[in-house]
Length: 267
Image (cartoon, rainbow, N blue to C red):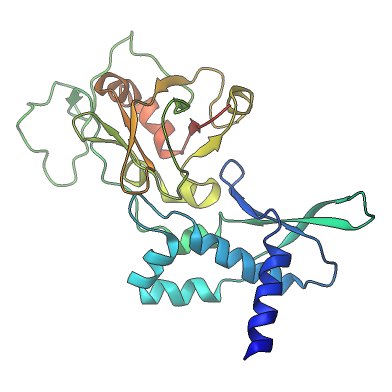
């Protein structure tokens, strides 16, 4: 028993040297000091790191898996792809090997709870005749109301949320709310294909990273986060006016479907 415990502690010490999740590239990054650690061991440690990540405002991934036994079994069977990304030498002659494991693809596909169903925070109209839709009249089943647009409605190429002035923790599935509690962005506004392929948002640490991120394009809508919310401080509160700008046209809503959202969390 003591030998098993000793091996576990040593294994953790070797692998936990600088391991982290990069929510810009959506990869687990692990630095290995020993050359005899197998790819299978690295994959196992990556799985642990992912389990410890925040799933949403109230749960870790491990919490979510504990609530969903079927998904937990699927997650445990995922073939985690590990690749060496770089290596460098220390002053004592030893080598640090860098490994990257993508979270996107099969991992997010297994964990994603569902998408769609978001209601735009904008003046809405009939998708057929484009006439103003009565505010208190529910749309018939199968009818998706669209924003009322005019020739002055701006078209943005992405959304940049500046959250540098608030405490915010990256998560797999954040939500953005208005001050009135209406959801402005999250899985309900995203297309599952884009979430699986690139993650719901990119978290970046500088304006340079933000504007070099292909999600934003050349003319992004810039929004200031007012505060964070949720038990894990992962969700974002923005102004009602900002949310309406995000949802002001079908083109801008398409940006959300395609996850063209970047969150700036530090500089």
